[in-house]
Length: 189
Image 1 (cartoon, helix red, strand yellow):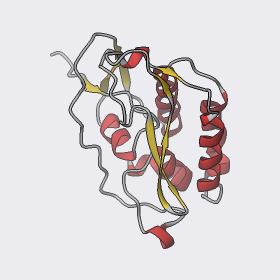
Image 2 (cartoon, rainbow, N blue to C red):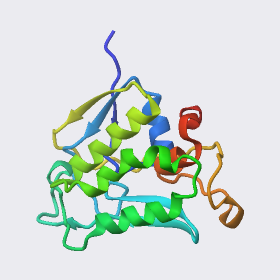
Image 3 (cartoon, one colour):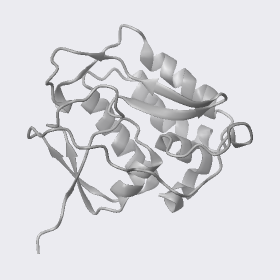
Image 4 (cartoon, rainbow, N blue to C red):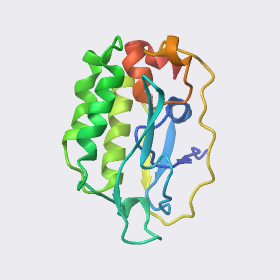
């Protein structure tokens, strides 16, 4: 019997719900050949800041409107990586597990990646390592139309740094769960 492989878009520091769906699959396919769409979670992620949801967007070099995910280049002319890491530190330095896991994520913002796909794949591998998730991931470079938005929402609440001020903010980047729940993150995934 042939194993079913489910296609996933290549998101940047994806949501808790995305990782939950990914972890439910023993085999997953990451689509690198998919046409890149602007203003999606392929180049964005959300964290919980003191004022509520904070969207962090990664600047890109746009050479073609029909570029695949594997071809999209990062734009470092604005020092976005330093600003994003400072935003993450500000949002999570009081989180119970920030000091235990920050060193895994900081290199994503100090190393200069040429392609968005390189950064996103490194982020996914880091997340799988921390959460101790054993998933077989295949990369697919074939061109495909962009997937329709998938529902990656998670229904379980967990502790968050600013919950008293903002209430529980669902479907944030997996960073939020890892920095707030640490080794218990796998239980929510």
